[in-house]
Length: 269
View 1 (cartoon, rainbow, N blue to C red):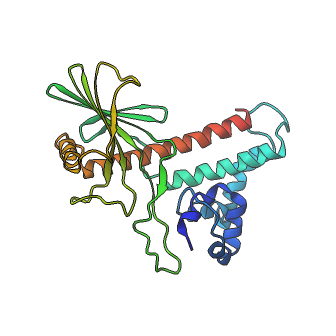
View 2: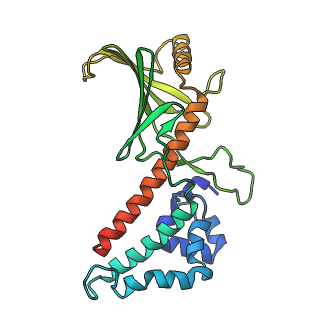
View 3: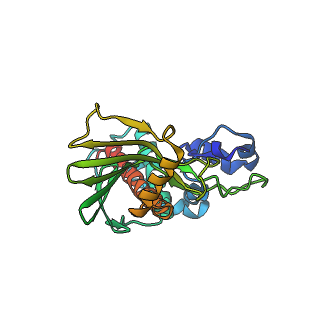
């Protein structure tokens, strides 16, 4: 079974119910996707033990007593969507590792703006700024999955965004675009988990006329020296692992917020 195809299955409730009815069907079906690997997230909401609690939560939707001020105003599709969203929000909150996003990461002060994260640290006459966006960055961590297992446990989902490192000194900016290396990529002598995609340096503000070079075509020794330079600035493998953890927590929080906003929109609250 290709575990990557199980990614994001929880979004399709009909598939979930099929999974619950037949574990054999899960093995046979290689085309389903899954957002979060813990199938028990949605099983918890669909189990008999939560049935009475679920009914009490959804009664207001089915009877249209959701606080919208309208009597029986919701369509069948709206009721079903609100039901599922209520269920899904409970499941996501149950598996959420943290509800508070730190304001600092290893000496970098964090600023959140929508889906974008900016980390800033000042050292002597330099300012180091790291920016990344959590949209479309969640993927399944398949490194810990044993392919020889009959029913392998699904890996944890992690956010691994591309990130830009800007080192500002006076009016000059060294700009390095970096990304996480995929499993199987050559991480070099030090097993680096990230690489440099693009290098540029410019005066004042960036514009489309600034020359940039791909990290794939620069001299390999120069490439390694720039990685050492980043490490000297605190951007190490360990720091980038923490960046991934930070991004994962923030993306999960943003996803729950999206579900809540969607539920309010559909219910007319």
